[in-house]
Length: 273
Image (cartoon, rainbow, N blue to C red):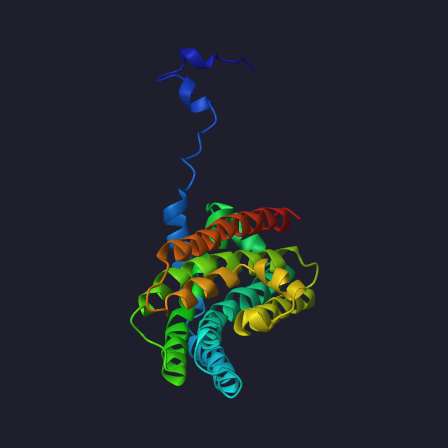
């Protein structure tokens, strides 16, 4: 049996071009902003079912604390701290408590594997989930602030400052909540850490600082939401010191960048395990 070379057959054997032999190049990596928007929309639609109970619980809790403190605190500087603290508490409830539970359950159930297969940066997953959960706090925070101002007779003229306080304080607390959920070895421990963080925001943010002992004041200064509370509380005065307000908001922004970076690192660490 003879073998005929392929080159002399009619048409011959087609050779594979040299460029096709090379490994196909991957497409460009997904950009952060489009990925963040996609994750945000997905998280927003997923959590939309639980929006009404979430808003009710967070708002009812904060309004109830303001009513309870009305029997203890009169008008003045202490009332300003109570109204500002109870308003920011809505943000702390979602960012620290619910977000730590969400990421803790996501890690325990293997849900991180789903996000690891998506062509999105890790920062987009953390920021998108944090932004989606923080979006639900806006109505409750505004309702609590308006109710608290009416309850204590405080002005509503500078209520617009909450448009800066909510995202900045929410970013700082969301990073902490996500990091707790991603670093906790068990979902029960993530829930415990979230509850402890929310309790700290309640006790250290709502109670007037003048009535606290010095060690408690130092612990209060370490809580990121404190600076959001202080920024909002300073706007109740007749002539607010806007430079100090901007400094407080800047501290929230700086802590937010650091905490979200830590949460992103924790996500990478948990996703590769």
